[in-house]
Image (cartoon, rainbow, N blue to C red):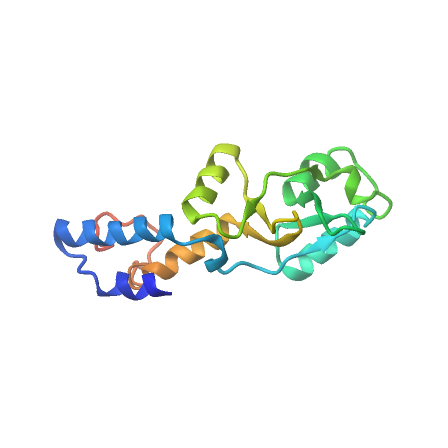
Length: 179
């Protein structure tokens, strides 16, 4: 992470240092592509996979979504998220063992290429209300999923000293130095 080293070297006292640090973070957001942001494992299932099996795979990998890909072409056809469990499975009281994920997934979700910038992903997540966006190759085959928590963790790595030096009390910092 070239940006992380640069952030640590920046003076943070006074306005000028704070501005310099903000510029580094801004540069990182607009220059780093999603391929450079560490993300969790990809959980991929086929449309016929049961909801229960999909949820088990998500729980096993500690991830909030699964991509649904066509069994023949590997092309992305949907995404199944924790939100879908709450709004489509639980509310309708469906039998998760018998219901295929294709019945409750979000069809043809918005996607991004891994070359998209972090800033663009954040914009799309904010505007559309997404917590997860599938990353696809040129043939629309899933290559990963970027989650809001992945971006937050990446941002924290850009300035680890600032995050690690927050006070241990459960209150909000009242000044720039956390005091």
